[in-house]
Length: 419
Image 1 (cartoon, rainbow, N blue to C red):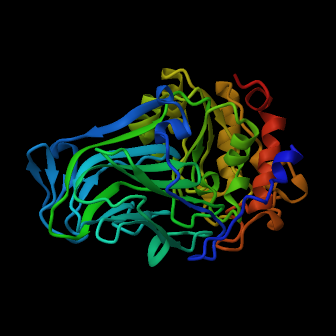
Image 2 (image 1 turned 90 degrees about the vertical axis):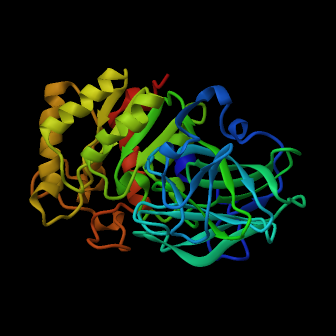
């Protein structure tokens, strides 16, 4: 286990346009991005759109062979009104681009540039560059994209007006943007592969709009794919997503993914998430990609009930997915239904009645590892971040490591016998 917890630091590089730790790669693509992450046979389609009715839009219109923009500006967007949580995701769009186009690609849950860890990328045909904007406050509650460019790269070839493929990849904490000429097959890409959310996490619905240009782009289709039948999906809120963790490689699910390189592991988590939000993911995600196991950590934002836990198990059973329900960490809350003692008492009694097991994250993060679920179970403050209020809510890197240790103790069948 120490081999994973003491991760190799040699891969950290600094890109000149930013003080964040990361790496910018460009013009290195020779194979399909499907193949560069997983084989095409391992992917399943979440969304496929080519008609006006597939999108939310303002001024885009139906055109021969696609959907055409009619004006510039962020108010003239085409929107896929779906918010996917899975962190291995491939957006592919075929479209016509004019040589003067600056096309914006924004993922956001509260309007363009805003929400929980949003992202904004661009393809600028006029300057022959691809780029990504920097996220504001990537370690805490990152809720807006800044005007500062994190990085950009020039095209590998002189691309004029014509047909193109744009690929947008979310592979864990890695963001990839690629432009490929449909005729020549030549491509350019930019990759942000770092240990914090420097360019966001592609959270929220996708907005596409023309920032500059007079030769209007025409979208032929947009497909969104994800990993088919992953061995494990970790579902939860900001604690699972990794808010306030100094290095995202040390969040529980990422450590598990690193420890199990021969298995398919995904994270489906979002800051502010409740059990109802997880249940909503079944129709749009879980029922489609059908995970074999689901590790759920939920309740810090309130909303848990035995009825909703029953529904969660029923939905998992319906797709042949084994459910693990973890105890909440030993955080501090003034709201009764959000107190970890209240949440964990419900989890303990419900799990016993339904034969469900989970990791004791409360013990992992309690002062002196106190196992008693009452008012004496206080948080070990050294294991929680000071980047947000309340302080004892989000485990820091050390806290996530302690949580990870509990998996092998409490969930040996998940940790050692995954198959």
